[in-house]
Image 1 (tube, rainbow, N blue to C red):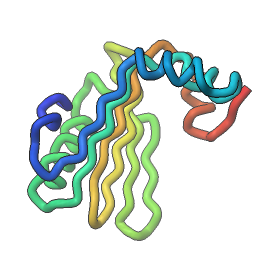
Image 2 (image 1 turned 120 degrees about the vertical axis):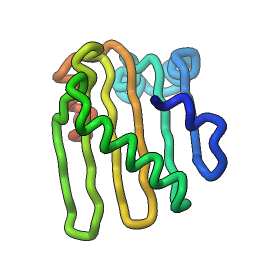
Image 3 (image 1 turned 135 degrees about the vertical axis):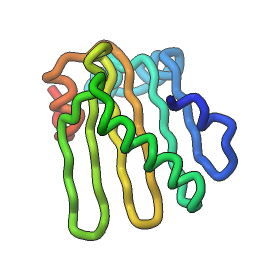
Image 4 (image 1 turned 90 degrees about the vertical axis):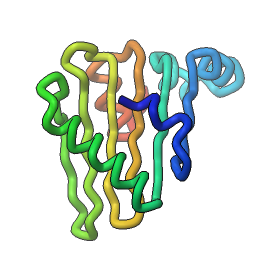
Length: 128
């Protein structure tokens, strides 16, 4: 669902693989690198143009309605900013954070081997 964005115009697409996280772990201090240790791949997709934003919004809606995905959290801040956090029931080591704002929509996908405690810490900005 997300790879199609790699070549779309007007979409910011960043894919960070395990090798980059390994490199970061060798350079960063121990506390910060321990928070990155379980991440194997990260995709960042974002757009503020009407056509591409609309496509991202449709994919967020599809995730919301897909029985293979579970919504862990939804948040609204009153200014048309909506955040969804999903996990794939078939692959529990995938965390998807989707945001829909008036001007921009984004999807962040983190895949790796992390526990539910580590996911909680990532979402709440906590460390060991």
